[in-house]
Amino acid sequence: MNTAAERRAELGSFLRARRAHLDPTAVGLPPAGPRRRGGLRREEVATLSGVSATWYTWLEQGRDIQPSRQVLDALARTLRLTTTEHAYVLSLAGYTPLPSAAEPVDQVAPGHVRRLLDALAGFPAYAIAPDWTITGWNTAYTALYPNVATVAPPERNLLWLVFTDPYVRDLLPDWETTSRRFLAEFRAEAGPRLGDLARSAVIQRLLQTSKPFRDAWQDHHIEGFASRLRVFHHPAQGVLRYEHHRLAPADHPDLHVVIYTPAAPTDTEIPPGDTPG
Image (cartoon, rainbow, N blue to C red; front, side, top):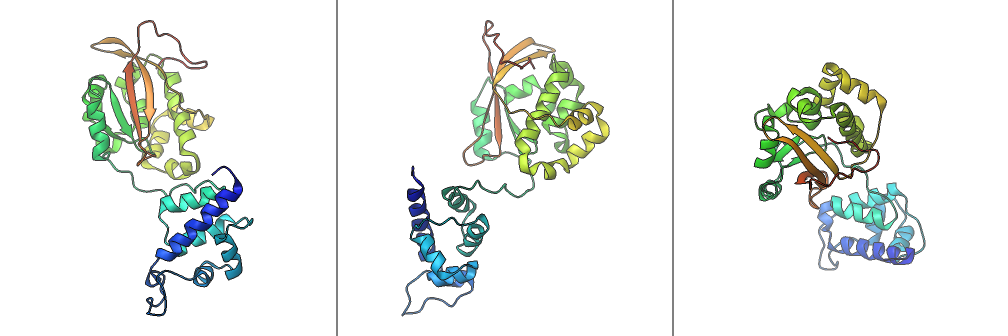
């Protein structure tokens, strides 16, 4: 759909389809009788959503009108749209989806993500939730950072470990720069949810217990993630060089899978402004 007219036509067709498939009893109306086809009438959708029947008819017809976000949200509630359907409607009207509401963080990654991590044999890999809780890892990551398997679950958070675990500080050759970069990436990803995440227990504990974290937090530095060279000083294996990559499963876009792939000995190029670690 390359034109506004095409997007309006698709929006109207989608709303008609959802209206036709919605059981009237789902919105508190009497069940469809013998004289009525299934689904809701346009007038009923309009009344339940707080708009005029004429205006809603025009919307379904794909006319050149611009619905407000509040109206589209009301229609999504009336038509009992799923989160994905709601986001689709907003996108057709030119709006970005609302940030998802804060939800409790799962301590364990979904099974298919854990199986993906295990399949990356030989490549250290782990999964982190939106608040950077580490929710899964593979054997190769345990070899790189053994404490991930033994730390208490409430403390199995990447920010907490980077700023409080001496093992991590020794593992990273440029810890001062790297720790601040991690925090800058966290803030950039948190976006509209930063207020909720900032009130989380791990952030509050870090503000109380770690001066480097407190100083970095007050800097309000923002930096987007970029794949890059990482260098580790492993106590048993010596200097390890990896390329740092991150992916997001399509069905869990807030869950990030971090993968370290071996970097060639001659691969010394680092993106401008980056530092090892």
